[in-house]
Length: 259
Image (cartoon, rainbow, N blue to C red; front, side, top):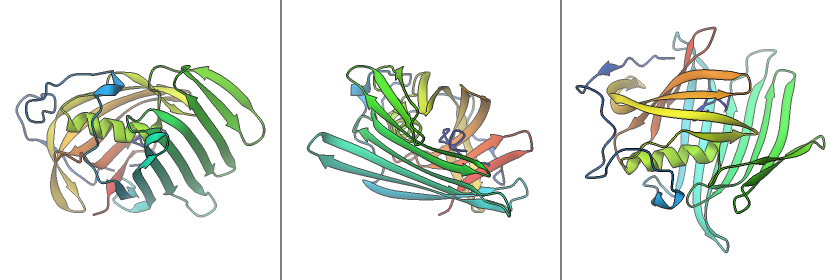
């Protein structure tokens, strides 16, 4: 699930109870004041996020019919520590159905530039369970992945490697500064290649109210995953993700912000 909420975003089984209509002429990269659009890979280019220092976003996960399948909650806290600025994220999802629990609890700690320090992943999907931790050594470009049952392994990582939760704050900050993140791996235990594309500004319905939002088309590839999904971000400085649509074999599901 979390792989899809980003695998923002996502995690989720998400429906387009929201309908979108193209509002602007041909799509153009999101612009903020005079900032030039385009990918910037230098982590030092990140600026202080425009979203709140302590923010909780709650989402409903919907079937295509609009019926709720469950709820997800993303909390982000920015704080100063002796080791420098830190961005701490926690993500909880409960999309259980009778006889089949779907629960996720993930935690991330990253630097002020969204370079991951550690990532904890826990989930229960029916009888399948996971409990593991990933610790990042950004200076030596490596990460150590440890599972609760004693498994351990190291992987090489790029400069300023990001876990799935850290990436959410990163893409919001980049969009707020008129940039699109470059193609890069995002870590959710394993590495997933993520490419994003701006496709225009649309009016979507969120909780039956129209919202102008920039549509980002994201392509995610990794272990057992090869999917393209939509994420809609508000056009204000906070660039809040308000809607995610994920096409799965069963149907297209949605994760919608609860205001």
